[in-house]
Length: 428
Image (tube, rainbow, N blue to C red; front, top):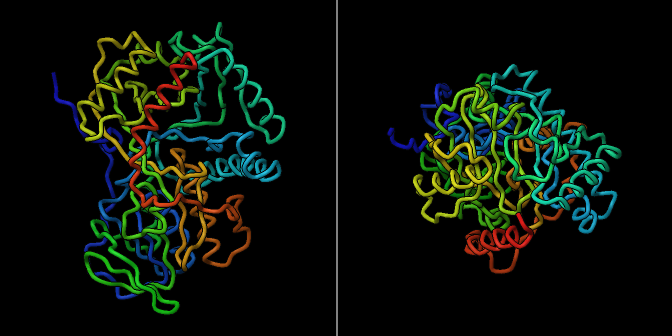
């Protein structure tokens, strides 16, 4: 039996653009920390607007979740839902946030099309299964309200019809979000990087930023390759924000997500599992999602990592146990690729963008960042350039933290076990 490959399946056969090999410039208009969706999209917009842009990446382009995610994209509806949002912000703000979620998806599709990025984008929709009959009724009720108020495209799938959507009896029906899509995230992030470089942005890989010093309106970035002065700085490090940036690190909760790609199962087996080749997920508290690969030959499964050492073997075993619980027909299937990445949650379950102590930022996408990060990067660029239509529904949300929290989520093992218990008690 071939060994488990501890590398992202998405990287296979994809060429990454080469970063800058020369010396750092002494100064630039905009310095961006993080070469993922947010940082590179901002670099693209700003470079095209004539700004001198330098991007710093501690590893290689797309090293973080931008290149490691499940590649499932949709409107990124708020984790709290309408009720939670209304309770926290009021009804008007709740609807503003939800409406912008759909707008960000529209922008994302137009962005990919306009840039001509080949990232295996497929508008296949997403089936979200209900773990209980009660949750099915709630899903349909909430989705109907969203359809009536802001135009969400969906249709309900009763339990007696769900075999047309998914090859399992685990769920009690579900809903299909018709405008959700799947893609190869590594192709997307490298495609954006290529265009940013062509536009004139400098991208330095393996060039970690060690800190930022302020002297009046000028910021000096200390990196492993020297110093550079910048008029404007963007931090776009999300789940990989280090102690060098304590203000942001204290406001983010990094959560490790594991992913496996199965061996080639063949088109017939994949169609048994996912007849319409959709994206999939459920209503469980302990997040678990799955999808076919763009070529329809493998399944990809993802969820929270329970192994503290994040070893590929145990991570793969845990995810395949969950996969077989949903799909018993995968009893003899094995995982061929296994990898992990850190997503960034926030204490209010909302993504944030803005400016703190003269530093611009966009981060905290809570595991649903493909469309939102690219939209936020465009809006953040407009703010920096002083352009019109630069506002977002998140501009006035306070970026909160908790007393004594420094960025080390010591409590996450307990939270994950609590979610598992709640799933069990709910009959999931």
